[in-house]
Length: 155
Image 1 (cartoon, helix red, strand yellow):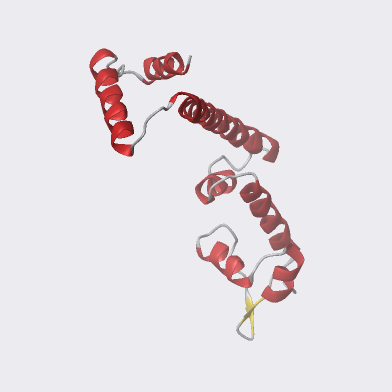
Image 2 (cartoon, rainbow, N blue to C red; image 1 turned 90 degrees about the vertical axis):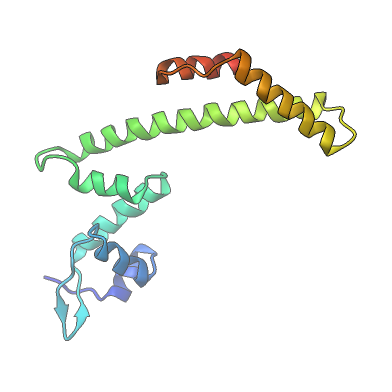
């Protein structure tokens, strides 16, 4: 039995009413029935919004959240849905951390090894090293080999 107004739902879940309308518009939240033109929600809307909020806090995109709700067979348990998406997200985070570590390494090298007096000198050195790397180290074609190549560059 729908009983909560959008402002009551917004207050209880800590969202703006506009966010709730947006989630409804894109299909993450079922359309609420209306009474006298006002949306009326039942408590299941609070639970759905809690899932959306937690997923957003954990870095899931709206597309991934849509997959959580609609990308599995109806009989798939919630725990299996979360496990599947979480495994993908952990892999994504691991890749991001590898990239951050590589950038950090380059920044540390810049801090200790750069002796340039002008930016033109820096640019020349960077340009020459880029051209040298392209000529002497062509990028492997397969994703597996590219990752191995990237790891070797970081070493």
